[in-house]
Image 1: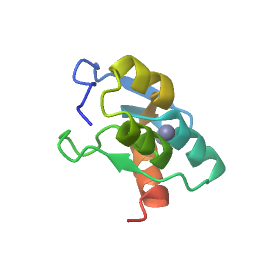
Image 2: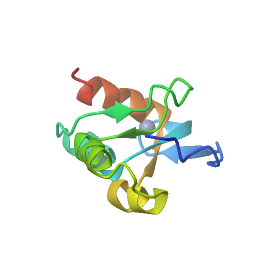
Image 3: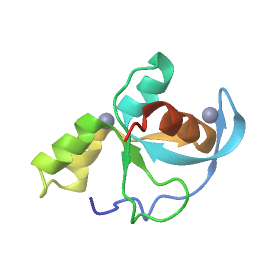
Image 4: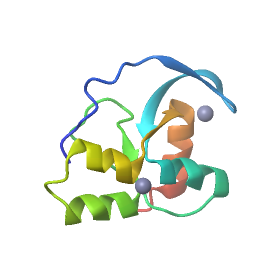
Length: 99
Ligand SMILES: [Zn+2]
Ligand SMILES: [Zn+2]
């Protein structure tokens, strides 16, 4: 997927678990999967750069495969990207990345 997040400003967030952290973006399903320990898959764009690029689940990946011409608006609607602190991202990858 082309990376639609270049414009996204890198501010910091206050994570309920990890406190003041940098953040990245993950689809809402990954954010929920972290809470509920559900296996939803873990995908990212290896060309996005940075140690923790935006991540999305297997369902979102499938949607993007099915809709190669989907607009960013449509992708955002499906994935509903949320801010996720970088340490939560690490946990999500640990939990979900089973390739
Ligand atoms: Zn998703
Ligand atoms: Zn966190």
